[in-house]
Length: 301
Length: 194
Image (cartoon, rainbow over all chains, first blue to last red; front, side, top):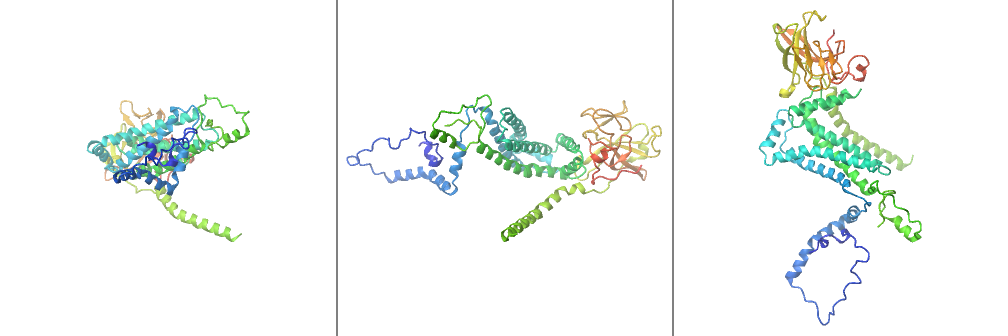
């Protein structure tokens, strides 16, 4: 069975013009001399079973009209010269998803209490089945995410992809960077060993050196004048409730703008020359396009 | 004003009130610790005969309760010294919290200095900065004598002239205009009157 038959018709990649099998297909056989054999019950049942996934998808699609949105997003045009550097954003997203999944399962065993936090982490690492692996994925994955987000930022900067009309997406990206750093900072205290304790002391004190508001910011982060029991639960709440929600919402906005505005061609590609001699009808067809923003360098199909 | 406009404004106003009724208590709940001062705590750290004028004795006591060992802090305690021009008959308790970023400093007897392991801050015998990145002298703790025991109380910071001010976090300057740029926090105790 071809994979294509599993995908509802509106979701299928549109066929290239001229390759269709419609009117120019093979001529129908003579039905009078050789009538088609009637399929057995088992055959018909099998055919119905094969259709089941398509029916389910079609049922959902009829009620959500999601296929139009999905085809627009998945089969959108990308500019010539798109290369591996363009995957850094998706890589960061995958790193975030990995953090979210491993984080949820770590929370099942972790206790955010000053007297039990360290013991619960030791329990995860030493006793829980695959605990060391899941904890390790979360711990090292945070570094991976920070590295990837900076590489993605560098790609965007050096390719000039932050310019009009994508400035707002750059701003959202910077907020996402700050939120990611806050995640790394608040997560560091949670094991509550000597290293995380003193790193948080130093980090909070650096926050406190901001003039006028700095001292109050320190008190807010610590929930008091000294790092204590409420500091840990406060960091835990910020780490797993407050910021993940904000990150998910902003990733949604970030991706929406990427799809809406399209991506940029790499800067080493020259802009395409306008076809001055083209007839009017052809020019109109080119302008319609896919609603891409001006200057994204997308090549006309 | 049209009827439609009046209703629009009224509905938006009620919506705003409902939103504020949810958000304001939550925010207040989160920022309340900034304005809360805990109970004043005094802890005995040893009989008066334990301490001398010309060197420090290291003591460990609880600064924050109910978080186990993490709430303990280290102080270096000595008798006040006439040679250094201090009021006689009192006790000096210097915090081991570095005034740069809060690492624990150590009193090195041979040098007579406090030295920080993190970024190389150095303080003299009285806790005044003599080298490295710290922005002010080491913090002090209030001291008193009860029943022949030296007791340590709330933390306070000092200016470069060792005048007591309310406790500041590490990294924050004290004295002069800095008293306004790094304002005293409501969660700290007033300094002892000198």
